[in-house]
Amino acid sequence: MQFQVENSPFTKEQVEYLNRLLPTLTEAQKIWLSGCLSASFSGESAATMESPVGEGSSTAPASVKESAAAVREVTVLFGSQTGNGQGLADELTKKLEEKDYTVTLSSMDDFKPKSIKDAEDLLIIASTHGEGDPPDNALSFYEFLHSKRAPKLQDVRFSVLSLGDSSYEYFCQTGKDFDKRLEELGAERLHPRVDCDVDFEDSAEEWFEGVLTKLNASRGEQGNAAASQAKVAEASSAPVYSRKKPFDAEILENLNLNGRGSNKETRHLELDLESSNLVYEPGDSLGIFPQNDPVLVDQLIEAMGWNHEESVQVDKQGELRSVREALLSFFEITRLTKPLLEQAAELTSNEQLKTLLEPERKEDLKEYLEGRDLLDLIQDYEIQASPQEFVTLLRKIPPRLYSIASSLKANPDEVHLTIGALRYDAHGRSRSGVCSVQCAERSQPGDTLPVYIQHNPNFKLPENPDTPIIMIGAGTGVAPYRAFLEEREEIGAEGKTWLFFGEQHFRSDFLYQTEWQKWLKEGVLTRMDVAFSRDTEEKVYVQHRMLEKGKELYQWLIEGAVIYVCGDEKHMAHDVQNALLTVLEQEGGLEKEEAEDYLSKMRQEKRYQRDVY
Image (tube, rainbow, N blue to C red):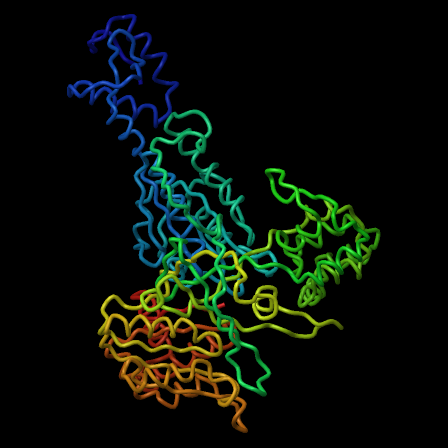
């Protein structure tokens, strides 16, 4: 665009200046300048920034800075199964709003897929679930985006943060799929995708800073996005406990729920939350930062020939701890991943490890990773390294999440957990679950555990307490339903409740039996169907009980009941879903695709909620 003197109110010198300036401006700078001039002519109060227009200079009002910040709206979408993704989306939204961006925050399930074409700057945070699958609250959006109905997105800029676990084959697959598909649809990548492992905090923070820097640059700001804040939240005198700063909760009770003769050990823990300011709702989880087995730690140090007290750096800030303390409390040592083996291959002259990592031995590698730990790797492939070289290869030890088994209304200042101790033999050695066996064997009343609340908005009681609910769980998967019924008892909920519970033996494994019976007697629990798989010649599981009660189950569904499923995803939850589809087909007269659509609609309406692992 070229200005001419004869058709403008500017002097010749001003026109020459404008014609030199305007071609150098970005679109964001042109829009900012336009807003600045408009506000100046409207007579608004001035701020301190001078206009770059020369003699006609005026000062830009504060409101112009705010409108400039909102030139492009930011849409933050999350797909999250356990709540980590939503927590990061909330944190990112807060950072953006503190910088005066206009932000739309939504779960993918609650976002109208077709409106993605209207998004401007799209930030996606997505976890990967199961075998590379999207989490439940991302399924409909994922399917739409990968369908022929997905629109072209030439005017959309995007960036993806993906969450996953590198010990799984399809690491961060959902985030990778979103990243690839958005590019295919013509969207512009604002900032490169970042894939996070289980210790995701540092990687997520780097992505936050990268995205903010790009957004700020496009609106003409300079400097580190993380260093400048337009608004500073008021500091609270009370400590705020979170995943980044866990609370040391004292153990009040630690009981074995299984009876004599059981081949299981299920612990009921009661923890003191007094003075923590932590609050939770039924359906939420408690995160525990565990310690590794001291015996395994000592075996590792002995195998490597290290001094227990030699210092190593445990974080980017340079904090030093003894190698024993580092392996005990800071680093994961019980799970092997492909990235770890790739790095370890540089620390050994044993060529067999490099051979194992060759592409054509994919299945051999998968078999080796299953059920082995760091001690196996050291002994099998003669790894040699200094303590510091070695710990730099390791991931931070991730917290373990357990469904909360209590209502805060019924148990003020307490939180209860139901934890099954994991023990098994593999590859010639006895193995154990890191956190579950710590709770079973090395956690006594009076000891403390570092904990935080993991909110789970995808597994919540209905807002209307008169809504009927159906709860399906096996083993420790029954934990959240104890919380549900405690809550409903406290608030006097009138809606019908139905529990399907499965375990091995009636006599030794009927978890919380007396409580269910009390609630049945009092009407808090309307009905209960149980399946004890080892008490009959033919194994019977919860899905079999559901099919037996198919007619009544379907009647509850058409009355608007909400279904909850908690437990193992690969087997139990998969079988339960197939049973639900069968009930819809047989009792509802639906074709297979119609039944699948019905269940999908229930999921979108929050009437089919799963807490699976």
